[in-house]
Image (cartoon, rainbow, N blue to C red):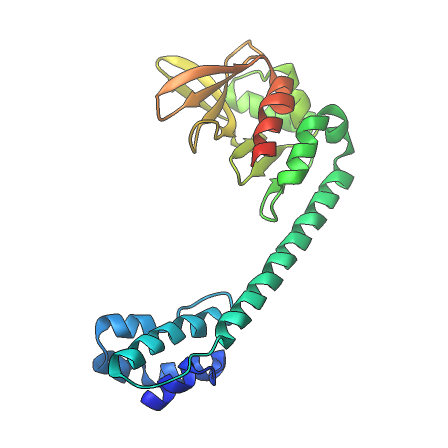
Length: 244
């Protein structure tokens, strides 16, 4: 085992050779080492190739130092991991730029109607975020019928440009996810989520109003947010997304 730990500490292992050796000797290593030593040496399951061997190298160094075995630690695994991380980050940035470009190209009417919001949204988009195609009048009417709730004119206008947005930084507005909610005896339609004060704060509509409200769930309070959907998008959400 000492020979293998020296190979690991001094950078002579590859992710494949180390994982294979570990798989073959895991049971005997668990019996031989203390629980802490075993867990530090055990290669973690990770999406990056070099993270497991880099982490195990730290465990090997600790064991060798404790035993008084001389060695010269290698920076190879750390360097390979950092290079791998850099490549991953660059690829994520490329994917993000492509998604932003596609969003701008595919949603000219959204940019025309809500320029500040659309620019902020394009800037904030992550690869996992979702912008849905426009809803039809029939889809909107169907959802209104199910809810027994007439959507404000400006909310309908928004859904005719996109049936929904889901932004991982805390903004969700989705036609198919609208639902009724009674808070302190008053009926609301939940338009979506806006993490204004805390995760999970909800955007609310009241019957017969263009006003947008929100429910601050940590305070258990309904608060007035803005006059209408345009103000919500062009001021409140545009500012919020630009700050992310």
